[in-house]
Image (tube, rainbow, N blue to C red; front, side, top):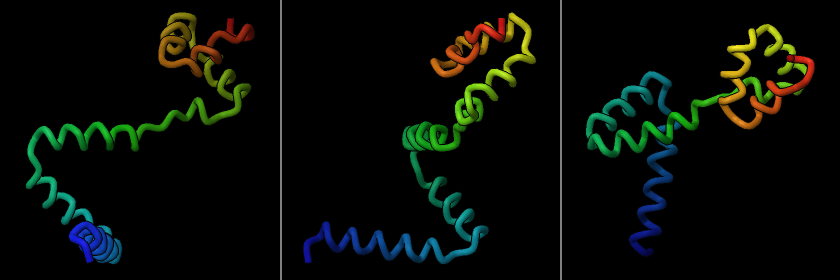
Length: 98
């Protein structure tokens, strides 16, 4: 067995053991690991985690419902929303909102 294969099998076994831990134990182990990581690696992890945690509820809604939500905004806020991203701009520019 090559070193890469052994390492992969070891990682799989480690992940399997981790999955069997309680949520509290998983949390404690993650915090312990993070304390061992260099700051530049923490920044990289932070950027990856931030993407995983981001959720755009407005883009998940049907366009008509998104427009209804935006209809409660005044013109200044509607202009600000339109600058957030392409989907929000498209919705904010619907004729019925102006």
